[in-house]
Length: 250
Length: 247
Ligand SMILES: Nc1ncnc2c1ncn2[C@@H]1O[C@H](COP(=O)(O)OP(=O)(O)O)[C@@H](O)[C@H]1O
Ligand SMILES: [Mg+2]
Image 1 (tube, each protein chain N blue to C red):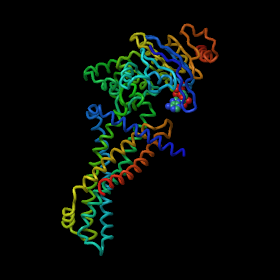
Image 2: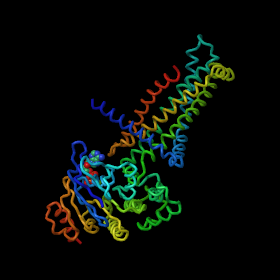
Image 3: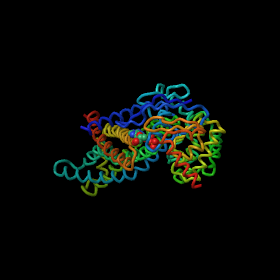
């Protein structure tokens, strides 16, 4: 009962924060000058190595698995299409988002949470600076650009790795692999995944910001906020993935 | 003028302020004395609308700050400098940028004006050489002085200090006291200082009030403090006298 109340309290606070962020779009000019680029830089280059590493292994695993499922039933020449579609529609956006939630989301919660408990946020308000515009807006905007960008990196990496693995593990030559992709690729495969990742970007940055603002004073406050940020955004990502998949692909 | 009228504030079941009535007259230095945890910070944050009262009014320059738009509130806040207890410096920015923040965001200043003003206030707090250090490289006293410089830079009519001398060694404390006196008398800034440091209170105050059990219990001119017969207030004075005797 108590945790249900807490859930709705945070949902309410989070919604309010989202509305305040939308309202702060009025002052978008101030954000685009500097803080936005700084966030883009931090988020993108901070995450690229992890994203590539994850993509390499998911490319390898899916290829081997599809080789295993398809053996004897389906012509393995089409392993490329199968992997590419899985990667672009689902694995690329979702795995990237989950990885990034652990990094960027937790980072945002820790940073804003520390600012909350050391009264830096109060201090912004006292200077007449809207902390939502100053802290949340640049992060959300950057998240909306960075997540699709990282997803493209992940898609390319996974498909490239997979094409090599297909040759190595199941004897499908690279040109056949890509020929299959060309034959059956639908633009929707790509943009559908990217739209997903755009929403994941909003989720990760908004949830991280919310927990930052909700951080309570005390030694464990910031730690709790980061954990909550990762858990909550992971759940929201998986839930949103379902909704978006139904909306786009059904 | 700042006026608090019958301000009540509770957090959950905990009543912190139970009807605070207080006037701060322009130009004066008012000290709010009180034990730790009595709600001094809570009171101070009411003046800038960081905390809203459950009941009662906060009036700044004739305006009830809890009944105006956010935009107007931000305008009023720009005329109030707030020195937070821990300094609340932005960790990710150097001293110069920290102090410049209130000006950078207020777009009417050119880069050159900003630089002049920032270096001027850093000079007032004797920290011109520290302009390009990061907050993590500063000592406690330096952080407080940077916070004071930042509160000053937009030339506000009011400065609110939350325990400016707490946690500093007595020598640095005295420098901060001198600084507050100077700003009050030379720049004519109206000052509200929250503290439990009686030594500092007696040095800087024009008027001292005692916050106790959620109300203002004592309200006295500096010159009349020795005539107050409130027992808690006298306890504070006793600490001061004991210090004097040791000296
Ligand atoms: N945001 C808050 N939420 C809940 N309780 C608070 C909050 N701010 C202050 N309090 C409580 O109010 C009381 C007074 O706090 P404070 O004003 O910080 O005391 P001090 O006089 O030492 O500055 C404390 O018991 C504190 O726990
Ligand atoms: Mg306090």
